[in-house]
Image (tube, rainbow, N blue to C red):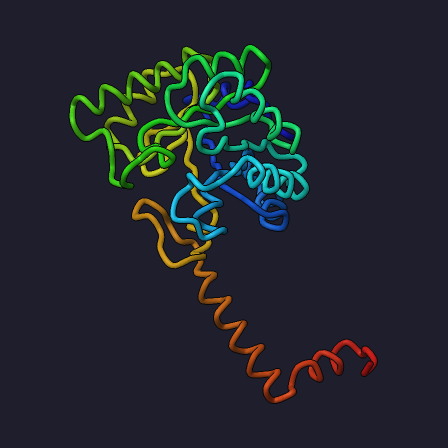
Length: 261
């Protein structure tokens, strides 16, 4: 059964929320079959799948494409669509682009920063919103941990509270000190989802490529549950070798009983 924003609010302080990103239909289908209740179609797709240097190069058209693919694979899972850089720069623009992601298959949208007016406008127009504070990749100049000084910690606390007050039903806390995430989690009535923010959040999110070990580099706060890049390399080597020796496709013709052409 697909969960709603109200369902996630009820999990606050009661049931940890696991969240994974997905960008393609087959991966989304596998995540749904595993019972993960929420999938984030993040603008991280630009870096982990498209080879961009930052998420700032991702467009709304890219996000529509990937949200639609994920929806086809996970028809009964809550899907969050990420609003890419500058597509939420004002309330009118944000609503127009959020509506595009909802039409593509998202159940809610995520945006970075304490954009109070934008969040209020979206919620007023019945578009559920997930906030995001701490490290915000769309505008960050580096991927270093934030919130380590008193002033920066106070800023992030204020942003989290503003995001809640504007009407968001959930907020992502990225790459901040564990103690700060704990303070924010205890001070909010909405669930916090941590990524590099420690164990005290109400839930955790991982980029699926990081979890699968697919790529060349993974953030220090991520965990690799597999190493699929190695698997792909091994499969490619074996296939190339079998083609060179003509073992393939003869080995599958014999196995499947298919004709020789």
